[in-house]
Length: 564
Ligand code: ARG
Image 1 (cartoon, protein in one colour):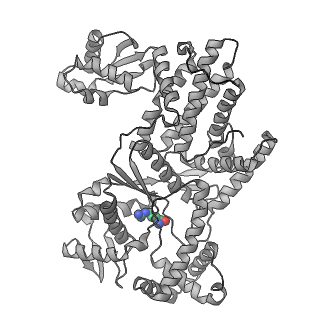
Image 2: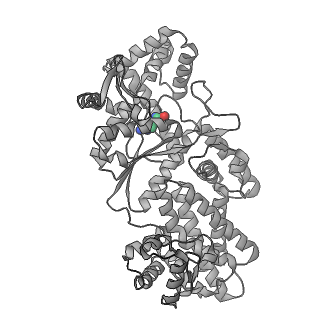
Image 3: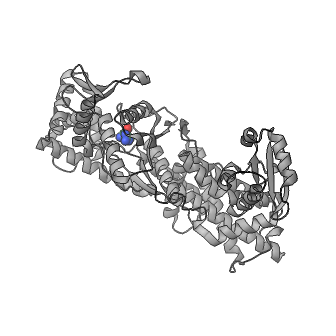
């Protein structure tokens, strides 16, 4: 709450010879409420003041101006802790939430700054697999999070639509052309072709043929280009269907194929600058002094590589969007690739290479191991969503058989379960997706949060009248009520933290905390009672909670039904 920190800074300014903004950046909101609502750690002051932190904290505590809105200001070890009077805290927090409604937590901190994000970015000619859920939804959540902080997010779906694999596909396709060319080819058929190729590719001849086809494609051969266009178009159609279900959008679908010419230009410039050198007929950038293997830019036959296209694409993005940050939301297997790309960008003099970040994430598996397209063992994302929706539908049929629009709700709950089951984990963790836990209405799940929201809405409906506009909020003195208010007040900071760490799971854990505390509260207390004043205060709390949980779920890309 800006108001309280402003007041703290004002009082501290009189005692410290420091700029207000520096004081403010030192302030923390302790997670342990016995440490107060705000805390000033004195460790950083020790050097300039040449005193031990506990002594500094004590002297500040002795001399600082006391009184409202603080009920207590005390020194504990090296910290100066501020306790906001509960009534004042509840008043400020709830008024803000209720006044700002669905905009609560938003700010204009990022005004004028573009954050470009490359996420999802699947390879075409294969269906989206379950592993794509991670990059797609982490990217989507970061997009929403940066947006509410006032940044200008730009979502790029950098399709993997170029590379030797298309030569391979063409080889298999050509062999079955008569049967395949009649109608549209589906992405699943393309996947079969791909698997077929790899089942036989022990034969070197096939590899040579595939390379030849890819070379034709890079040289603009009309047949190769038209096949490639067909593959791309069909793939996009299928991707779109899944993105629609997930509520994910992009501002651009320019993929690797958009950077072929520029890649040649990159190679030429790097050669001229002496950054790239020839090695056995190929062009490489030697990165030995940075403890990395060489970055390959051009093969012997003159075709470009993944890294070359990424370098060209990064330059284009800088030119086009003048980004403040460029985020690559891509699995950790590509760590080395991005280290190489960023280093090469730096070597050709792009100081903005520092603004590029690999937002990496771990692997997703189901029980039964990881899935590799090459071996044909791919678990399609769409099938997983269908299955989740089907299970959600069964649960709804059982719990709430008379519910209207069951299909719509089942879609929200099933899809929400899959999204949350992934996004609640810190992104760098390898995770195992488990059906039972993901769909559980009581566990740490999407449906649990959706259900909490529905319950909060149910309480307001049950009250039946227009919500009171004011109430005596100092009546909210139960332990859980105090925690709920502190948590509500912390929402804006949690959004900022999630953006700083590129970590949507921070919002997810926060929501679980909030819903968990509410549910404990609700087991012990009634919201609507004979005590009109207390009822009014609690109703406002319930309304604020509902607003924040909905908003948090929305940031994660999860929809919330009215009833379920
Ligand atoms: N298409 C790649 C893959 O599926 C991911 C692309 C990530 N983005 C990038 N700029 N390299 O592995």
